[in-house]
Each structure stands twice: as structure tokens, then as C-alpha cells.
Amino acid sequence: MKKLFLVMFSLLFLVGFALAQNNTSTLYQKGTDNEAYVNQTGLENLSDVIQRGINVPGSGIENYTTVDQWGWYNDGFQIQDGDNNMMDLDQMGWDNYSLQQTGVGWAQFNLAKVFQEGKWNSAEQQQRYDNNLGDIYQKGENNYGYQNQNAIPNMSPGNTAYIDQIGNWHSATQLQRHDFNYAESHQRFHHNTSLQDQEGTNNYGYVDQGYGWKWTNDSYAEQYQRGVDNQARAYQHDGYSHEAYQTQYGEGNWAQTHTDGYDNYSWQFQDGLLNRAEILQNYEDWHGENGAMQHQEGEENDAYARQKNGNNNWSEQWQFGALNIVDHLQDGFGNTAKTWQYGVGHNHVETQIGNGNYTETVQSNF
Image 1 (spheres, rainbow, N blue to C red):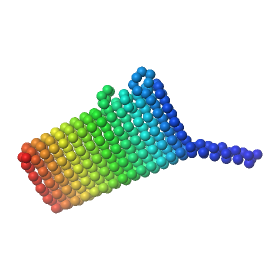
Image 2: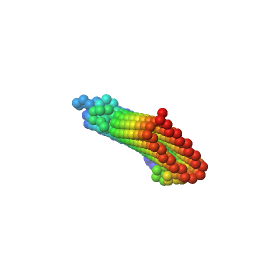
Image 3: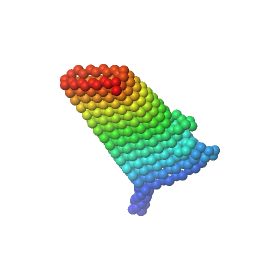
Image 4: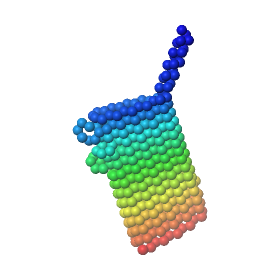
């Protein structure tokens, strides 16, 4: 009897383990006020949820779905069309991948969130039209994030996108189109990369590499904006091999790069009117290979480059147009500063204090 009980217990255990190994879930919904919830725990998890509808009476309104996956070969996938959709997906261990698409057509009020914790993470979210919010949080190993948002009239303004990556091989890309968009990317330590691309009016792009305890490592951040009254800010805290490029086309734009040591280099380009470009390097850590280069075309533009305390400083600024202002300040070691201004009514201020200073300035009415 005792043997029989043990055999039965063993069989039940094996059956449960086998079921946990082969989890699969597929769900399709079409209609009004739909909800879906999927929870998977075991090994070979896969989930596929589709909720359909467009903005016509009796079709695809107030859909909601959430998926929890915990162990091993997790996938994901969720697609929603229609009104007031919301998605939520949690993945924890190992071979995670997630794809979420919210609205296409006349979709509104969409929200999509992804949380991934361990190993070979990847996440992709695409949202279309009206007031979308995308949030990706990734923690460890081979992280990648990607968000693509597009808002057009009909209950715009604007999309919001957050990506927060903490450890290892980060990459984050966020693309936003139309007006009043906000994109924010955080990367803590190891192979950071971040690219944000915004097109429209009153957009704001923010990249922060390193922060709590000031990790960064092999950083790179690039922001590209086209439009009016846009802001691009890139912060790179502590070290190591920073680079940051920022490009803006339009009027009333502002670009700022703030980099601590070590192997800093920054490049900023602006084309338009009333733009402002600013580079700060080594303000919290006085070591760095430094660099800094700014190029502005248009009228009434301002360019500022500040490099304080050590090492191999270099700053170069180009301005084409009228009534432009350029300002350098460099503090220590192998300083160089070069300024080219072409047009009329220019203003140039330059200060170099310590060590191997060298300055070259050209101002021309052509």
C-alpha cells in the first residue's frame, strides 16, 4: 500500500511537471468590455492574446488584458485594436521576449506596459494614434527595448514613452511622431546605447545614462528632433566611454548634454532660428578625455560649451547666420578652443585658464 501511494505520488508529480514544461495559451476576443488574464509559471511558456475592434458602436471598446510569465522560455505577444485598451505583461526568468501592439485605425487612450527581469530580455511596443503611453522596464543581461508611437489629430495631443534599463547589454530606441510627445530613457551600467527620434512640436526627449551610484560604462546616446520648441537633454554620469550626439531642425529648440568623466565626446547640430545648444563636461568628476563640438545654422542661435578641470580638453563651435552667440569656458590641462562664425552681428566669449591653451577664432560677414 505504501509503495502504491509513492508510485501514485510520483506519477502525479511527473504529470504536473510535464504540464508546467509545456505551457501554451492562445486567446482571441472581439466585442465590447472584454477582459483577459493569463498566468503561466513553468518552463516553455508561450502566450498569444488578440483583442479586436475599431471605433464603431458595439465593437472593440474597453478591452483589457494582462499576462504573467515566470520561468524559462517565455514569449508574449498581445495585439489590441479599438478604444480604451490597456495591456500589461510581466516576464521574469531567462529567454524572455515580448511584443505588444495597441491601436491601429481610430484607437484611443491606449496603455501598454512590459516588465522583464532576467537574462536574454527583449521588448517591443508599437502604438498608434491618440494619447498612448508605453512603459518598458528591463533589469538584467541582454536587454533591448523599442517603442514606436504615432499620434495624429482626433483627440491628440501626444504620446509618452518610458524605458528603464538597469544592467548589462542595454539598447533602447524610441520613435515618436506628431506633437507634445515625451520620451524618457534610463540606462544604468554596462553596454548602454540609446536613440530617440521625435518629430513635431513641443516634444521632449530625455536620456539618462548612469544615475543611482553613477554607473555608465560604454555609453552612447543620440537624439534627433525635427520641429518647433523641442527639447533634447542627455545626461551621462560617471564613466566610461561616453559619446552623445544631438541633432535638431526647426525653431526655438534646446539641446543640452551633460557628461561626467571619462572618455567624453559630444556633438550637437542645430538648423533653424532661436535655438540653444549647451554642452557641460566634467562638472561632477574632473577627469576626462573631453571633446565637444557644436554646429548651428540660422539666426539668433546660442552655443555654450563648458569643460571644467582635466584632462585633454577640446571645444569647437561653428555658427552660420546672423546675431549668433558662442561661449567657451575650459579650465584645465591640454585645452584647445576653436570658433568659426559666418554672417553678421556675432558675439564670441572665450575663457581658458590652465595649461596648454590654444585658441583660433574666425568671424566673417560672408
